[in-house]
Image (tube, rainbow over all chains, first blue to last red; front, side, top):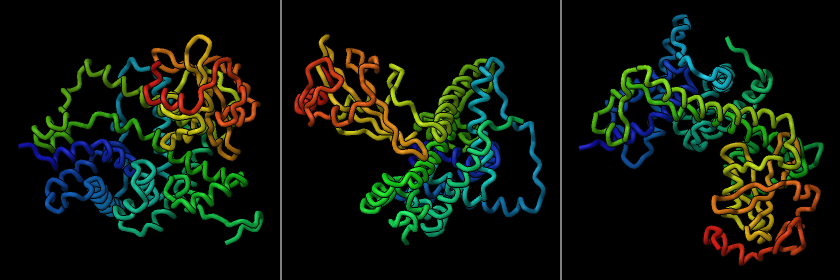
Length: 170
Length: 250
């Protein structure tokens, strides 16, 4: 007997990973967050009401887990691990990949200069396409807060993207 | 609140963003549309909000196509994975390389889209389209829209394609003039015109020199009945609608 809850959750994984990447520092941290959220969802699935949106519920779990993590992380220094950079195959067209990588990397780099709360609304509304109202429910803030954060985030993002149009690969 | 310079109503950033996101009720949206038509600063700001969404969505789109890591799939039951049409990938091997390389393609497309978005912040598009290659939005508009009825693409770079007229050309093909409108940031909407003809395989772009960019738009509308840049028999709206309904088959 297949499990509809699991099937629906599996279908959501790409969007959850995208949301994670938009809010976390790197892709491995993002997948850690998705993994923790999926584990939590499978454990406490009776808390999800059939007929309500599973995506909003999952985003909310991820957001809450992430906020908890940020609180504990602030107590210790963060060290970037260069070995976690994704390896690319040798016969790749480098120009194209560098261009492509820089695009996502640059947007991510600029996003990561924004406050956490702004990244969350960008990820939910602008990237994933949730309505302001749905995002407000996920984040547990009034819709007016979502809109003011989001508009400021988008102004800042575009300003900073336009400032450094070439970007720098390190 | 009243704008001191124009004397018209001032709109908050949140209002303009909601307008750009198609999230405003119609009366407010109309008020902003009218105000933006006369105020390039307002139009620029709306365009900035549109661009921000297009840029972000394009940049993150490739993430959706990435294979889900096995450690996430391992959390699920095997039969649920099978029902969801997902199978854990085999261990990394040289055979996996071509599969990974294909991921560069959507990323490259997204990169060029973002580049286009950023470039369009600085430059207005050319007045006349020079390439015969038709993109999906143009094809969809030509295939499904009556003359004078635009098809908008809000999801990516905001654009609108409106067929202007339909003619039965001398060689027996149906040809349509169309207009593509983009709102280049900070400028009034910029339009390009083109012509495409329907052959067995679909729509093919024609030499755009045949379409005069300086001709008034009205000249292209079927209601005017005027001879636009056409060298064939102009179709009336009923004939056009019938063609659209049967997929441009004779």
